[in-house]
Image (cartoon, rainbow, N blue to C red; front, side, top):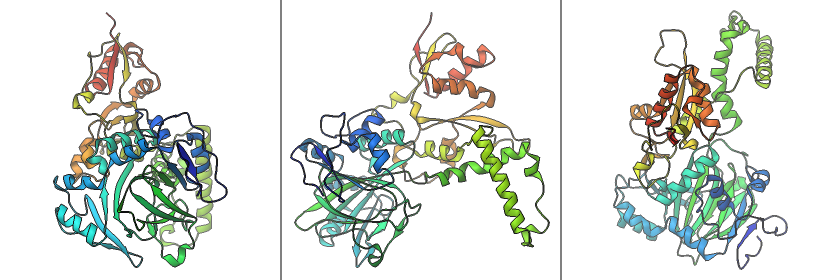
Length: 471
C-alpha cells in the first residue's frame, strides 16, 4: 500500500508501484454533499473520476482510497457512531430484524442474539465483554443523511442501494471469510479496521458464500482502513476484517448495490413475456412438441436443434428492433422497493402549483423516481389479453421498511399499482419523459380532453408541475 499523503487523498492499490493521484474536478474534501446523483457518486470515489472507475475498477478489482483531510473524517463520523446505539435502542429495535450480534470463533460465525427487543445495557455488555460485533441493518431508516445519500445513489445506479453498520471492539472479528452477491463500498467511520481480501473462487458471485481458510490462499490485499478512508470491492471478492489491537473499536458503513442486476437476471425477466408476445404472431412457436417428449422418449437432439433455431430467430428480431426487451418485473420491483425522495417536509411531495390546463407548459417532477411499463391487464383474466401502461413511482414508499420489506403483502401490492392508462397513451407519456417541458396541448393524444386528463392524473399524483401558465 502506498504511503499516505499529508493532504488530499491518494488512490491505494496493493499490487505494483504506488499509482499517481487520480485527477478530479473536485477540490475540497470528499464529503458526500452534492444533491446531484452523479456529483454525489463522484464525491464518493474522489479523487478518481467516474470514467476511470467504471472502465478500470468496477466489477474488476478492489480499490482503496486513503483520505487524510480531517473534514472528511469528521463528516464520515457524523453518519453513524457507536454512541448512537443508545438512543436507537430506545426506539424499540428488535434482534434479527434491526440488528445482529455476532462473533467469528474458530472460523465460524457465532450469533449471540437475544429474543425480542434490544436492551442497550445488555448490548453494551456483549460488545465490551464478549467482544461481539454489532451489525446494524439498514441505518438509512433512522439517519436522515444516509437516507439522502442512498436515495441519490439509487438514482445514480438505477437499482437498490442497501447499507449496514458494523461496530467491532478491538482484537475481534465479527464474520468469517466470505463473499457477497453485491458491489461493496466500505466507509470507515470510526477507529481502524484491518481488511484482508482474496481472489474470488466465484467471480461476480450471484449468491452469498462462505469459504474456509484452507481454500482462500494468501491475501491479495492487506489493508488498514482509517477514519475517512473508502474501500471498494466487486461481488465475489472473499474478505474478512478485524479491529486491530490498540484500537478501541471500529465502526464502518457498508453501502451495497447491484444485487441481481446481471445480464442473466435481465434475460430471466424479459424472456417469458417476450416469447409469449412472439407466440401471438409466429405460428412456428405454436406448433406442438414431438409426441412423448415429456416422457423423455428420444428426440433430444432434434429438440435442442429446434430450440437453437428459435433462439437464433429471436436474436435476429432483437437485433433488428422487431421485438424489444421489457424488464417489467425488475423495474417494478425496483421502483416499489426503493427509498422515497429525500425530503424533510412531506409537503414537498404534495401536488405542486396550479392545476394544469391545455395551454400550460408542464414538466415531470421526480423523474428519477418514475418508471413506465407496458403490461397485461391483470383485471381481465377471462378475456383476451389487453395491454395497459403503468406509471409507477416511489413517492409513497416508506423509508421505514426500505430493504426490510412490508409485513403485509396486500399493502405492498396496493402501493405497487401506480397509475394505469390505455396503451394508446404511451407515446404521450414518453414525450413527458424525453423533454424538459412542453405544453399540455402538445401531448400526442387524439383529443384535448384526453390531454388534460393525463396531465391532471399525473399532477394529482405529484408527478407533474406547471412551469408557466398562459393566460
